[in-house]
Structure formats: structure tokens, C-alpha cells
Image 1: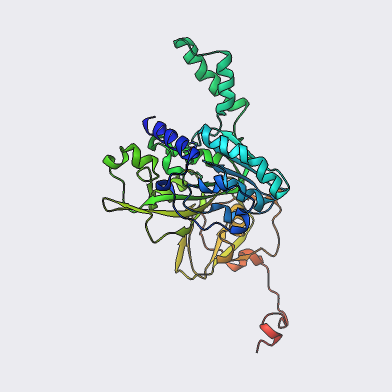
Image 2: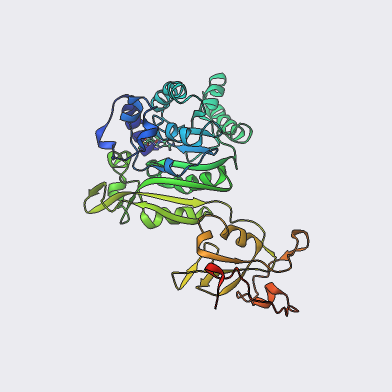
Length: 382
Ligand SMILES: C[S@@+](CC[C@H](N)C(=O)[O-])C[C@H]1O[C@@H](n2cnc3c(N)ncnc32)[C@H](O)[C@@H]1O
């Protein structure tokens, strides 16, 4: 908890007056800044712009929303048909964000942003609801301390701060590094929990080029300054994979470090990761061809595919590949005779991974056709 107190104290002060040491210059789209009051923009402690990757109509959750800048930008991008939820644990940050929300709403003509108090590694626990309940039954002895623990557990289930499977995009700007090392795995699991199937995380954060030594990690000033809590570039991506994400991709990598401490480089990176590869696999005789340019690829479920070869995939993988971030890398081959979902059998993962063309055409297929005038650009093949 020592680092969490240091983080809270530092950001409580940074909410009241700009702390230049925490600012990492970012080029936000100026068209969205016009509607946002100066005190919000001034107290910007981000290191990237995940709001660039949200789309109209989406429900967005911003982890560690600070004074609200990313929420207010995302609010304009998702429009009146979408909504944005900011979560922060620091009351002074929430105060600035909540005070400015109606101002932004007036400027843009609609209100679709709200701010909630919670710890991002425990997105089920609404700290304001817990505060209110504890006022009614204060902790005065061991028994009431233990009862408070039970109460928190009950609130997580009955009145979650952020419900499971409820969010299209989780964004965050320079916050994940601040979460204590021991609760970081839980943080990634929480991001996974709140996302809808098919949803994604777009996270900008500080990463290190080498493992950060313990002596630096134990420095609360460096930790709260978004430095020594950083995961390595590799560890950051692995944390998403460990939580069950797929299609993990580096969207932006700042070649220039933000800071270098004792030779360790700390820079901003923005990644994207998807939820939705879990689930049963059914055989519907579909095939895919990896188009290249690499000689082979390996996906997050262990499918290894060489360029140009027809591979058998189950219906779930086939449909996953048809969407972002994979679609452009594959050709998709449907069987001539479709296997209805209702009669599809479980996919046999022991089968050969190649799909013979006869499997998609059917064993008895022996058609002979005239030339297809659509087959070449301009219509003249030979
Ligand atoms: C570096 S600032 C970034 C603020 C904002 N994302 C921005 O772009 O300006 C970190 C913010 O995360 C919040 N924060 C840090 N650790 C947190 C945690 N474990 N749970 C919730 N909020 C946290 C702090 O209160 C602070 O507002």
C-alpha cells in the first residue's frame, strides 16, 4: 500500500496545480480540445492518445481518468449514441473532472460522461458506495473490520462499479504503471472482465527497455512519477496475453525515451488487445490461407500457418480472423455446402491442420465450367 499512498498524495496535489514533472507532451486532436476547459488540459498527465482509436456509438471506460481530458475527447468521438465512464481513486482528480463535465456537455450539446471512484485493479468495488455504507456501520473493532470485508465482497457482486461484459473499449493513458506490482495481474484480469466479447483495450503507458531493478521500484517518487512501476515492453504485452487477450498489437512506440534513469529507458507505447477468443470450436469445413508477407505466423491460440497454404480452422477461429486485427492477412474459403450451426460437430484438433480443397468442395465435386469472365481485371484472362 506504500506506493498507492504515494500515488494518491502526488495526484491529489497534481489535481490542484499543474506538476510539470508529470507531463509528457502529447499531440491531441485540436478539434476536440476546443470544448474542454483550460484547467483540465493544463493538468494533463498522459503519455499517449488512446482516444484516437474509439468509434462513434461505443461505450468507453477510461482507467485513471484524472481531470477527465481523455474522457472528454472520447465523449465527442463516440457522440450522443455512445457513453464514457472515467474511473479514478483520487478525490481531487474526480472533483475537477466532475465539475467540468457539465461545462463540456454544454459546449458539445450533449452529456454522455460520468466519473466513478474506484481502484482500477478492483473495478467491481464502488468506493463511494462502500464509503456510504461504512458511515452507517463504522469500523471500531476486529468484528466490524471483518464485516466490512464481507460488505465489500457483497457490493462487488450486487452493485459493481463496472459490470462484467459491459464495455466496448477500455482506454487508459499513463496509469497502469502506477498500480502496485502485486495487483498488476488482477488489473489485467479486471480489464478483461469488464469488456464485452469482441471488445478491445487500447492502452497508452510508459514501458521500460529492461527489467526495472528493485532499488528503483522501491523509490516512491520514481514510482508515482510513472517511471519505476513500468513493465518492460515485453512484459506489458505478455500481461495482456496472460489475461486471455488476443490480437495484441503495438500501435505506437516512441523511439525517443520520455526519461532515462541510471541507463534504463522509459518510453511511451500504445497497444491494442482484443477479448473474444474463448469458446467452443465447431467444424464447418472452412479454410483460411495466410497471405504473407512473413513465411509463417503463430496466433494466440497456437495455430502456426505458413504463407499460401490452406489450413483447416474451426468456425470460431474463422470468424475471429474475419475481423480486426486479422482480416487483411487472410483469404477465406467457405465450403460449397454449408454445414448448419445446429449440426456442426466439435472441431477435431487432432486432425491435420491442412484443409484439402476436396474438403471444402465436397468429395464428389467434379464440375467443369466455362471461363469466368469476372476472374481478371478487365475480364480477359488469356
Ligand atoms: C499519470 S495520471 C494520468 C491521468 C489521465 N489519464 C491523463 O491522461 O491525464 C494517473 C491518474 O491515475 C490515477 N490512479 C493511479 N493509480 C490508480 C489506481 N490504482 N486506481 C485508480 N486510479 C488510479 C491517479 O489518481 C491519476 O489521476
